[in-house]
Length: 337
Image (cartoon, rainbow, N blue to C red):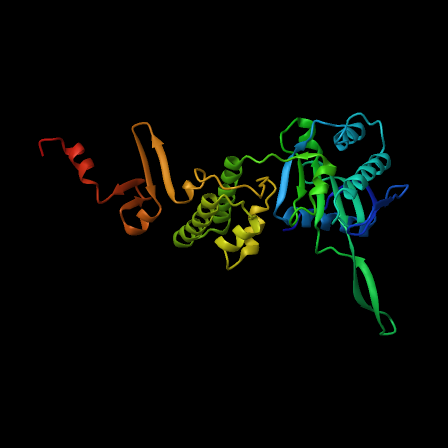
């Protein structure tokens, strides 16, 4: 998934120093980063990685600004303009240090703060990026170690949609959940309240599947197979009270090209949150058509179209039902026949 370049307003990189099961400290840069082509590429790449990642939590700031100071700091910088970007990020780093200390398995890295304008909204991105050792060949054809940023394994990051936040919307804050609870401290650092409503999230997941079907223009048979797989898997999860993994959904319902499905479910317009137990009421549309008109109501399984019990004629916009139940036939004909 690619996105247009972002207009970077402020950028700085600090460092969180911490080994697993060790203490944490910070090293702070004293001035903002220049917006060079390399900096632009880095921010754009991180934004693309962030958008493409499934398993994000969505929510809003906690109301307790003593225990969770980030919303207060963001307000002082964005709305009150009482602190500059370096002060904002420096104080956020102090709180990040505190939260990292509380998570034994947390490890350090470079912490990038970028305030930028995307296609529509102003946002603040915070991403922790680690170093890896690769291999390079110099002008003398010698093989050397090359230390560089690991751009393929973004595990800890968060994003504040500043435009949505200032409009008073309910969900403007997101973060990568990662695997297990290792990244939980980052949620606490951001002060994100990500209460998940299973019914709404299940409805959004179903919408994401429908969007995928429409975008890929699947035929009727392929569409029905996809919906049947999704319904079966989500119904199983709901029956066992197991939470949804969006990566697993993509692999199970579209195994031939799961990356395509992951991209559809990662669409930011869905704000789809993983980790919820599917609400089985919300997955019924995957298997059933249901509609109401002024004089009638109709509900039937998708399979009825394949068996011929229900036929839709698009040329004259009519639906024909076959194998009418005996009781309905009697009701229609009256008691005398």
